[in-house]
Length: 70
Image 1 (cartoon, rainbow, N blue to C red):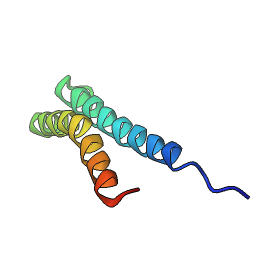
Image 2: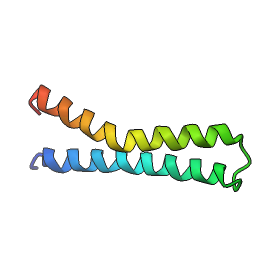
Image 3: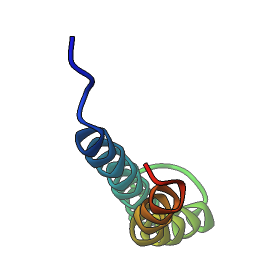
Image 4: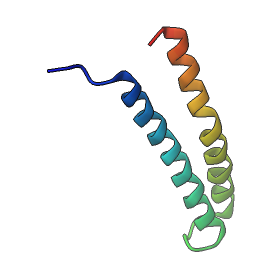
């Protein structure tokens, strides 16, 4: 059986990281909008961390893959 395509594996890892970040932002927005009963500060923290993660984690992963020659 053939090896799975490493580019496809990396693509899905990047998409999972982005999806997790979007989910974190969404939950943060639900908390800020008082739909979820948690402290508002938690919502703002999740919102900021999710936004930062959305943009930084894929870049960090790509640099790591380039550095390791994968």
